[in-house]
Length: 496
Image 1 (spheres, rainbow, N blue to C red):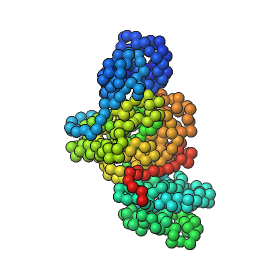
Image 2: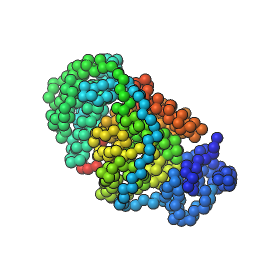
Image 3: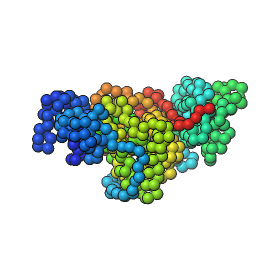
């Protein structure tokens, strides 16, 4: 088995596959490079002596510069490398479209066709509060219905408590309304009970109008201040919803209707080598089937944004991408926070030293397809193909935003591991076999076999089948099996 990876021929660092020992000699390009100190797996080792200010090259691009002299064979980490990024930038549109690498196939998944023509991959009954004041009530209602029905006939019965819906102003209030609207009308829900208090900012009557044209048989409302016994009344409504939705059956849906969110979290030095490139190949495949993928985590595009901008299908989409990037930088600046205060402690422990290094790995999830549209936070998908979505890097907030945009499932790569799930299936893909072996209760699929010699084509073939089976309900994601179902709304302003 190889001891290291040199990702790009122009890289002046290598990545250790296993821990490298001091004094070990590695053959690199016909010469031997002596390891000067112990280097953990996933971390970088210098292939040359760096003077202060010299670029560190990984993925074929600069990921920062040397803070101090770095000897050949030394460990390159956050202590001796510094980001090259700073401030707002001007960008020039230089379109570079790549050919489609996958052929269109007549593939389907088994899903649920909804009355409005949309398709879902789950048939669940959701209880959604308009405001956090009724969180306890919705949780009790979900538990009572699960006990009464034993879940028979539904894929899941879930309440989604949150902290918002009142004491919010401006964009925060609208963010809450949009996310809750998109949840209530999501095709993975066969039925929804919206539970309000009655005096909140997010007034139930106004929220009902905000839903637009919706299936009144499948989406019902209860205002707790207006009923004598909210649990008895709620259970009555839930029984009616259950009676309707539990009769739904799966049917063949073209793969072109599948919508997939792309996310990473707890990333490590292998993320940009195994799991993220796997998602990139999968994204290109699904786009070739006329399906839809969505890349988010705007701050984790910083440093790799020009690669996305130059793949924009038009000047209009390029301009929207520039606005996406610079508006999020302006958000940091407006709050007197450093724009490039990233990676996290876990990222650094896993081998990621700068934001551009993280971003160059992160954006590989988008493959090579053209960027066809850009969504603001709370927007819903309207264009098939690869989309960009404005949301922060926070795992639960970003995953909730992906689900809210209309994604049926979130594909989530991780090198450190995480158990959570949002309100759609949240599939965890490990970057290395060690994590997959150590956390089988969290991890759904192991991309670490790439480090062990499995060809990308074979791995992607297995992964495509696994995603289709999961979408078809043949298997549940680990977060579904564990009952880890959560949501979080992006907040940036004043709380009254």
